[in-house]
Image 1 (tube, rainbow, N blue to C red):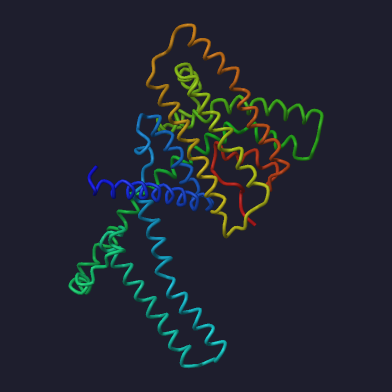
Image 2: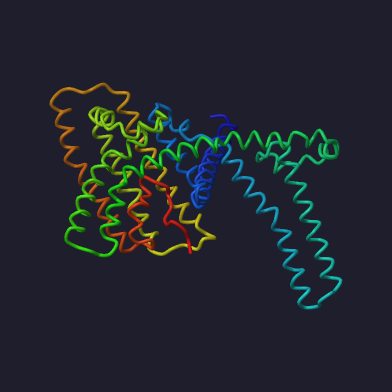
Length: 372
């Protein structure tokens, strides 16, 4: 193996890990912001839809390069701000020890100078592309030749606009909005459950709540795959094409079962532990980081299951029929386990009964309606 390949492989792995981490962090920040969180939801739906359409995993995670660039910019800004923060801290200490001293004034001037230097350094790196090499290699001679020219900076706003447009935020918001509305329609039984159990009533209210729970369970047999189908087709009506989902299930029942286990048990259930105590509003993105990191694999699993079913023909034979019936008998157990945890979470979650319509497995990956 060539020496340059040996160096390039670990660098590519590190770049891929950093890109994925930056993407998850960016989605977590978006998820923590009301209304804007629909962008994150739309992106997750798009991942499942892209895989269902036949794309490979890398193609199903668009904006990885942009996420890496944003993550790198955030890291570099934090590092570049350290000298200024240190000098500002020393200046405050000097002012406390000897108010109005020349040392405090000198440190204040140094802090201002360090801030301006960091700003110029970052702007110069961004003007050249904002890649890692541009931060590590400032090219001072080129800066002295071109830094004072207006042509060097003139294209920066246009490139920033093009970069923002490449994020496709409006498309993801529209996809997330339609996906959320359609999913909430499927969650109508959850609203009935909330109304039935709001005052702790029994009797008729308990019967209505139980029937609503059964209807909710039936809906959950289809919703995860309907969402992937909707994102692949990009049609609101696709969220209600149950016959299509039933037909696709017949082609790949075991892939269906595995995807449902991932989507309703393995990834969402552990997250209910983070719903017990509300998180301060200022750091809501931290639990959202965990939620996105768990729910993203679930979207990948549902997308892969639908893709596998779309690529296969309708199977025939004894084993195919037996497989379908075995999975059909197991699927209610999968949904039942999930609903048990949702039911228990109404007593353990910070938001109480609202947890019935905060189902992060099929909606926005957030722990609470808001922080404290």
